[in-house]
Picture (tube, rainbow, N blue to C red):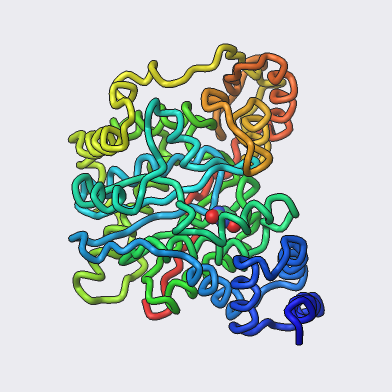
Length: 453
Ligand code: URA
């Protein structure tokens, strides 16, 4: 059969809901990278995956095919245990900026490859780009040297490390095919497997601000990624955390960097610290389990607290903050701006959104808060668009705060005052005020371990 016919036949097979084999998926991805599968055929295949669903075997095969086209990092000769954390994406999620230097200060090696934000979700690479001078395009040689000397780097995925994902992600963005559990799992895991890690912690977000809107969906995504990790020999733990409202108070790139700096100095919102410390605790536990040649466990409240207390020691003694300074310095950034955050980019226009009535703030929907930040210029609606790193918002109230009418709910930051009106409207869509305080928010829903763990 000719290549064109075979490609069309495979798209049709998937469209009819049949499972593609590992060889067929490898043939399609290899053909796409070599120009034998056209962009429109790949778009049709992605849509067929979205509509007909993807089995775990297909997601694993896609991950392997994506990885086969990559030139992974080789970190074997960097001494120490290499662990990373990756989030499935949320609003106000600045966890990586706190966790990576903290974990490095505690002795782990953290080779962190991050992405740009898309839609209402933020990306670590955009947040980092608000630090003047900071380079995030590092060569594999620089990554390795910095991992050895500083214990961490935070950089963008290079063409070599994630060649298929770079193209597929842009195509998915332009064809409404991002929101598929199988496609998200293979996109994330192919990049993490290219980091040559010893173990991985995943933060799978659930709620209105996340790809997974419900707990069953988040569980399916988490289970699939943990299963792919296990099949590929990468011990993986997935922690499902809440994204029904933003994490912390800042949403927007430079604003989130400032909040992360405060957190590294021991001043942070409780929700941000709870999620950051839980994920760091699981990284430390995975490293301990590997050293002891034991499978990882779900941590009891008592053991989790012990790890978190240890983390807080490193924050309170300034080691985590100092490690971020070293990383920024090594990557050519202005460490002075971290010591004096007023040097970070600032928006020209700052205006409040006021409470329309009195009562308890019952909900602050992460999707709408993310939309408001996007409208202010903090995000992009196409993967190739640019962002205004100074734009975003700071929450002045969070559930379950009691409000007076007219009290500021948030301060909006932008360089274009024409954006304030639409952003306020979007923000207020996500506000629910009632006469009773809401039920307490559960931040950590579930922890999933590799099948052998
Ligand atoms: N993050 C990724 O890296 N890939 C996806 O598909 C979604 C979120």
